[in-house]
Amino acid sequence: MNTMTYKGYTARIEFDDRDNIFVGRILGLRAMISFHGQTVTELREAFAAAVDDFLADCKEQGISPEKPTSGKLMLRISPEVHGAALVAAHASGKSLNQWAAEVIQHASEAYRNEALRKHFDERLKSLDAPDIRDRMKRAMHNPITANDKVSAGST
Image (cartoon, rainbow, N blue to C red; front, side, top):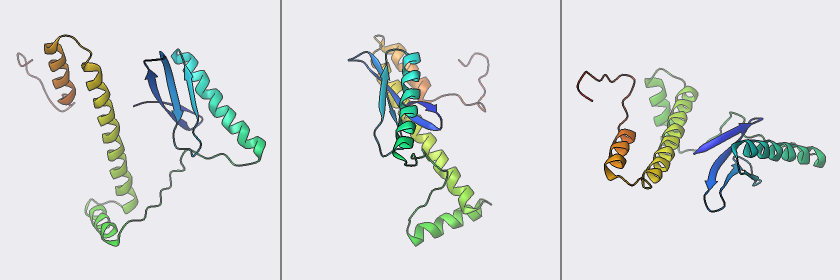
């Protein structure tokens, strides 16, 4: 998923192949605010204008604009899950808040990585040469990490 950020608001960006334009939608708001542009520059300008218009409309109406996120998250979970999370946090030497923040961060990164992998797989379908497609797919699904070492002659 491609995103843009402006004044703390984040938008999801997609390309509409049929209309040959970039389309964006601001995330995290009850109101559905979208914008588009034929170039990245036009898209950025349209995104800024959409956020600025949203903020101006809120001011005109005398209402406080929704904030994208505050950094505070209230959860309702079963006592059993709460207890298990507390044990896991303490076992790792962290507060429940620190542990939960890390778990949520890892989960959101995994979601983003899976979305990128799906996008990459869709793009691979458009390649004509199956051997190139297969090599690129293997490379994407099994990337070499910074800790891995490749010895001479093993590539």
